[in-house]
Every structure is written in structure tokens, then in C-alpha cells.
Length: 404
Image (cartoon, rainbow, N blue to C red):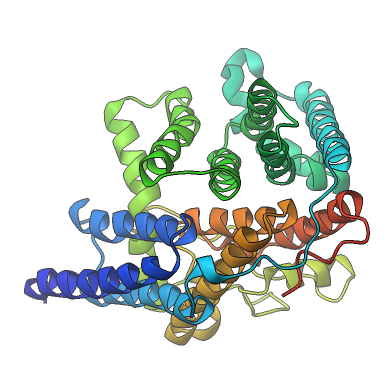
């Protein structure tokens, strides 16, 4: 079947390229289409060149190409007209004074809860042995033990205040130096645990905020994407990998998931007989049900390790595939593509920070899709609650920005 690889790749890439070209005539703004296409072009093509450990079988490759097409299809419906023809919906501009109040409040709360957490866990960090790497080696478990609702709400609230800061900059109510300071503080709170996820979230949030609220050319968008990925790359350097180790880790993170997904497709993923809920894709409901005592055990977001390659990430299709089989794998990208197209349209037609926050979160989920599905987590619903509260602060008596 290996002789079919080249024609299969050429066929799907040509078909996807045609769909993408047609869509870009309708969706001329940068965002989710570029992000998803870039991620999955690298993962699908790169995994086939990364060696036998990471190279998926042809049926798996075809499934991921079909998922890519499934992601693109909803955009043809959502953007039935050229996006320039959309008229901004009746959402009043947030008050500048209230925007400043929200920015200052969220910044102070974010810095305060992060410093408080560092103070609480500092005594248990073995800085003498691990240095700053103790924040990564020991910090994650210590933070989980000491976490509170307030910490969960505000530790990573840069996803809300970065769009507010960029909007103030657009209105000339915040200087360039002020915007840079806000972004630097946000990066500091994202990088405290030396984990890649929050840093990537910071980069995507800033990229989307600048793209929606400022004039960005294609070349500038790609340049910003490259520059904002720098802190993400630096974390690998801080962790002390040499050249060969770094290449191995990047290959495992980048290409391990699609190969590990084959084990899941083959039905070799170990399921717990003690789970009260069988659904992996409803993690946010499982979490809530456990909190109110309706269930005791449910499928963990931390997956079991695959036998080859040694990774516990199975791409964003894993939960829906475990629940609904191949049909779930084809449904998942359609749902994600619909949500991405709708939030893209909403962000660009309203230019409201609340809409941009939700769009940035969806784009972050797309950026993480080669590893897992972020949108099934409870954190997304907590973010919606935060956005609703901030909207009430900055847009008194305005139309709800998250409707429609």
C-alpha cells in the first residue's frame, strides 16, 4: 500500500488547496483557516518523513485529510457571502474608561494570584537541586494541590486583558510602551510554570488580537507568528536539551500524536471499568457532575501512554473517536470548523473584546489540535463566565456580544 502514499497525498492536498483557495476569496481576513492548515500540513506531511516510528499508515493519513476537509466545509456555509459584505452587528463600542478599569483590575488580579501561588509553593520547591526547573518538575503538582477557584479564574486571564489592551492601543488610549508592558506581564504569568501550553496560549491570543484590531498584511502575519513562537521555543532550550534530544522531543510532540492515534483506532486504548461516565468528549460535564456528587469516577484528561511512540497525546480527535468511533472522528472537525468560522465572523464584525477573547480561545484550541482537544475542558466554560462578567463591566446596557 506504500506505493499509494504519493498519489493519495497529492490528491488530498490538491483538493484541500482548491477548497482553501475558494474560501480565501470569501474569508480574506487572517486567522483560523491559516492556523489549522499550517498545523496540519506540517503534522500530516512531516510525520511521513519523520521516520518509521512516527509514520502513520495510509488509512490514518486519509482519515486526517478527511478531517481537514471536514474542518473547511462549514466555512462555505457560514461565509456564503464575501466577509466584507457583513455589516457590523449592533454592539455598542465599550466605554474607554471602563476598558481601562477592566485592564487594570485584571492585570492586578492576575499578578496577585500568581505571586500568591508562588509564595505558597516556594517552600516545597527544591531550587537548590533543580534551579528554576523546579517550577516545571515540581510546580505543576504543587499548583494543582493549592489551586482555588480564584486562581483558576485569574491566573491565565491574559486571554481577556490582552484584547482589551490592543483595543485601547487602537483607540490611542494606551501607548506602544504600555501595550508592550502589558504583553510582557502576560508572558511572565504564562511562563511561570515553564510549560508550553500557557505560552502558546499567550502567543495565539496576542496574534489574534493584533490581527483583528490592527491592519496586518500576509507577510506581517507570518512574521508575527514566527516572533510570537520564540518564547515557546525558548522553553525547550531552558529545559537543557542538546541538539539530538531537542530534535527527538520536537518529533515526539509534533508527530507522535498522529501515530499514537492508530492504537486508539485499533481499539487498543485501555478503558477503566470503574468510570461512572463513559464519555470522554463530555469532560466539562463529567467535571461538574463529580463536583456535585453525581459521579465518582470519569475518564481522565491525562491519557494512558501508547506503546509506540511513547506519548500520551492522541490529537484532538481522540475523545470523539473513543466515544463514537470513526463517525466521531469525522464529526469533531466539522464542529470545530463551524465554531471557528462563527467566532471569526463575530470577532471581525463586532471588534468587541469579548468576541475576540472567544475567537482567540478557539484558535488556541486549533493550535493545540495536534496534541489534544482543549474545548472539552471545564476551563472553556469558566472563560465564558469571565467574559460575561467583564462584558457587564465594560458594556453596560450593550447588546450581548456572545449572542448569535
